[in-house]
Image (cartoon, rainbow, N blue to C red):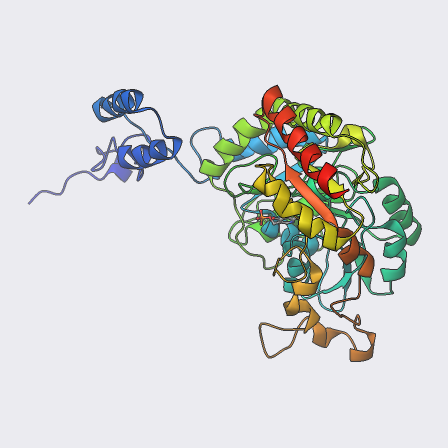
Length: 439
Ligand SMILES: Cc1ncc(COP(=O)(O)O)c(C=O)c1O
């Protein structure tokens, strides 16, 4: 049998025309996605008919790299970079992974300490998961890290200070940066709860050496799950790229040798997918108008609340920079807050407590027994074994009394940016009704 001329010798190809890129994801997946959006029944049927009838569906490429189409993740990074005003931005699959990536990019590891305060556990857990020791300090009436408490937490091992812009509002960044700069300690902002917020005109996440954002569903700007790291420092960005994707080391040459020292090391996989990237992109574009609506609703509710002896509001370090996602009120003491809270809820006011000594909550350090009891994932007993025992922080459930006192007398109202004027007035009236009875 005569052999056919091989393509390598100019013959015709045996395999040709496979299409631009064979997709693994088609109509079934799109229909599942549409189900999440909950179209009205009539429109749902129409949309399904269009999808079923489509004969030329290409399907998405949900991996950001090697994408034949412009990547949504890359577009979201660009939009985020522009919103925050930094030179670099890297998308990750959560803020937890952004924090690990930022700590690792900053070279934090065994034997180092990182200062944290009242926050969701992730800020501190990722310190320990990076083999470093979290040092927990107090907050002040802003519910963010107290600058004077930072000074007490600094030791020769301190490698970073991580102020968290808690509950939508900025930490006291001028004083924090002064201390950090004086001591030569980097600041990594945890912006998980305050994406789009500002401090004296500077966007949060652009003030410290790096900013870490969460886009999980409960945050200001959301994509279900997702995170971003912002920085002006090219070296940190390169190292973050490397940590967030060990398979790739996009620097930008995936297989390139190390161009600069400390650029190549073993990392993990914290890549954001194109699904989250697409939602994040649309959200970043809407962030300005959403934050404006949050602020307006908050202002209307706050202005509608009467003055009561004993009622104070959370101290805002920069009212104009607050995202407006919640309103925090302080009552004179915890016992009263615990009586007022159910009364507000009974009126339909969307109020919640911030801390109850009887209810476990991952936001308050006294429930972080993983840290307080110095637990470890492995027999190496890291991060604790890397520091002489008598030099480890003296953790206890009562080590930050000011934080516990403030948190226990705080009442928080989450703001919905869709509140109408009537909603805001009704909430303020409900608060006035209850406070008139108790104060
Ligand atoms: C202050 C803070 N940091 C970090 C995180 C972790 O964010 P993610 O859920 O995106 O991992 C959260 C989430 O609640 C948070 O509130």
